[in-house]
Length: 524
Ligand code: MSP
Image 1: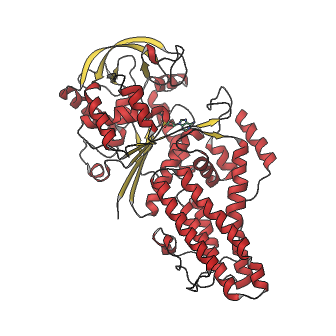
Image 2: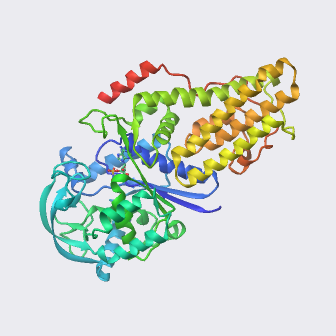
Image 3: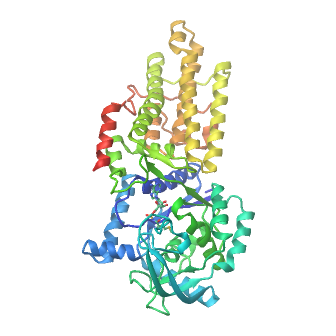
C-alpha cells in the first residue's frame, strides 16, 4: 500500500432524522475517501454519533425512553441511512461506548494533572440545543448567535480548560501551516473574531445534567460535550487503549471535514486539546458551508426539509450524490431548489453523460459489430487535440480534488464530457461511415471509448454504480483498465467489445411533474 489517508466526519447528534444537509458532510468525506482508495492508498474513514448531553436527555424523555434506549435507536437509524447511501466508513464511533468513555476520563485526568483544567464557577447565557454558553456580547438580539433560539442565564460550579495558555502557540501554528485550514478565509475569521479579542477559557464540565461521562475524581460533574465529542477522532483509533495500532498508523488525520457552524470548535479547541496532549495536529481541517433552501435554513417549522431517502428512492443514489457535491461549492452556501435538482438531472446526467455513452455504444455496434477498434498509434490532428485535452482535464481534476474543491473537480470532469460530445459533432462519424473513411472512423470510435473510460474512472469516487455501469457498457472488465494508474495513458485498451444493446443510464425526467413532486414532499 502507498500512503495512508485518514478522513473524519463530525459525529452527528442523534436527535432527529438526518436531512440532506447532514448527509452532505458524510457524502463528501466518503467521496474523498473513495478517491484515495482509487489511487490505491490505505484510506480509512471514521464517522459516528455524539450521544451525550442535555438535549439528548430531553429528547429521550419526550419519547418516554431512557437516554440509552433512545441513542441506540438513533444510532441504528444513522447506520441504516449510511448503508442506503453506500457510505463505506471503516469505523462508527458512538460516544457512549466504553472504548470512548474510558479514554475521555484518562484525558480529563491528564489535563487536571498538567494544570490545564482548573475548577471555577461558570455563569453565562446557555443555549440548550447548541449546548453552548455565550457571553452577553456574543448574543444576537438576546438570542443564540448560532441557532437564533432563546438562551437561559445559568450558573454552576464547573471545570475550565485554560485556553489562553495556548493562544500564541495556536496562532503560530496557523502561520506555519498554510494547509491546516481550508478555505483560508476561515482562518482569518478565527483570528479576528475569537483569538485576537482574547480567547475565553472553555468550560468542560456540567453539573446541570447527568447524561455524560463522569469526571472520575469529582463524579457530580460530567464532561461537557465538546471535550467528549472532539476526542472521538482519536479514541476511535485506540488512543490510550491497550491496542494503539490504528492510532499509530493513521494519526494525524489527513482531513477532517466540518460544517461552518462547528468550525470554531475544530479550529480552536480541538488543536489546543491536541497540543495539550502533545499530539500532532490534523493536516487539514476543511470547513464547508451549508445547503440552504430558497427561504433560508431547512427547518421542520418552515416545512422545507428534504430527506435523502426520498430523493434516492425516486431518482437513484448517484444523482443525489452528484447534486449534493456539484451544487454546493465548499466555500459558499449552496441552494437546494427543485428546479436546480431536476435541471442537473436532465442536463448534466441525462443529456451530457448518459447520451454520450449511449450514442457511442450504438455507433460501435453499428459500424464495427460492437468491437472497439485498436489504437492506431498515429492519431490525426483532431484526435490528438482530444487526447491532450483529456489528459489536461485529468490533471486539473486531480489538482482541484487534492485541494478539496470538490464541485470544481466535478466541473472538470463535465468539461471533458462536453468536449467529448463536441468531438462527435466535429468528426461526424456518420459522415465518415458514408464516405468509407475506415481508418478515421476507427480512430474516432477508439477515442470516444477511451474518453468514456476515463470519465467513468473519474466519476467513480462520487458515483460508483454509474461508473461500473458505464465501464460494463463499453466492455471494460479488467481491473487494470479501471484503475487510476492507467487513466493517464491513451493506448491502453485492446480486445474490447461493447454490450449489444446499450441502456440509457439516466432517462430524461418530465421537469414540470418532478418539480411539483419535490415541492409537495417539502411541505410534508
Ligand atoms: N455533534 C456535533 C459535532 C461534533 S464533532 C466532534 C454536531 N452535530 S450535528 O448533527 O448538529 O451536525 C453535524 C454536521 O452537519 C455539521 O458539520 C453541520 O455543519 C452539518 N450540517 C447540518 N446542517 C447542514 C446543512 N444544511 N448543510 C450542510 N451541512 C449541514 O454539530
